[in-house]
Length: 416
Ligand SMILES: [Zn+2]
Image (cartoon, rainbow, N blue to C red; front, side, top):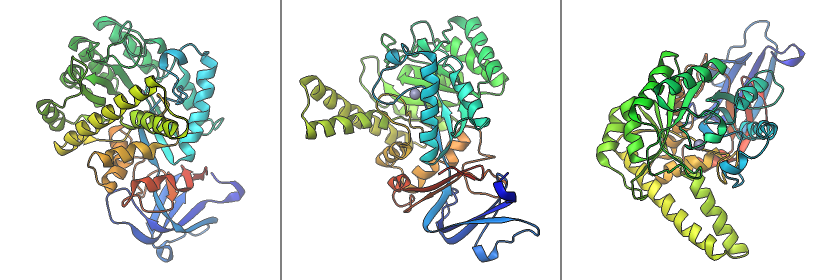
């Protein structure tokens, strides 16, 4: 596995946070054999097997954590404010090359597992295969491929438009056959021009058919839900994750409905609020205002975005209070959300009332559970993949410390 005949890697760190909610432990070491964690203990208690050829890495001032798990990315998208309609005008080759850049940025920031929630044609499947073959660097990817959407629906240009029960079932089968790890469905409109985010898109029957077909093939379903009616349909259809979950009412306003919130909390449905994708735009406009001033249109955009962020934080705090299973997924690549900044979304969970420690779990253990990969990643445990992040600071006290990256290992290989 390693070069020069090395069989084991010993990583010593000043502090260890295991990602299981335990208090940080001082002076710890993780022994890795191949790609797997085989011991976690104080360095003097770690037993090196006979015949092992050992390489040791020491990080006396750093905190060792599990690699981060980002539930929501778009590797085809640049994250520079280009709309999905405009990215759709780019060539397919550019979509793939964009993915190569984004995957590397994510990995170097400590995201060792991520879901891609929708890209063009088969590009994300190929990116995933390129990473597996070590042609390009990137996290372990769980790919939906193309999101399933109705005619004129959100992200129709990505290539999987399907209408009616028969067509949506066929779309699920096609995606699974091509390599989809999960199914992404657009249950309401979104930012795609003309797709009407304040309205549900698919009927309940169509959503039920998608969920049924995906579950028959062993695939989880994540539903893009902006309008509240779409959230209710998605719950009725038994999807596994509500993405955005914005509670937009038919008049376009955002208002939390506690009855729907209770339903979400009473089910096993995961919730992935995406707040920084809008908060990042606020940050950008505020910076521009300070440096060069804003146009009248930009001032209006800023005002509207500040309100939208406040509303989304309110909804998310209610969901957390009501006991919904909220996890971290950045939506990076979309709008102005750059790759490599997952901590920004986790900060918004803290703004919504989560403790820093819980926000870390939302971006590690809980996220891994939500993606169905908690048997291999998400915590530091013997038998799991050696996906490791080293940072300066303690994220259980301040989640923003996640940006102080010192080192990243994926499957036992140092990648930064
Ligand atoms: Zn998204």
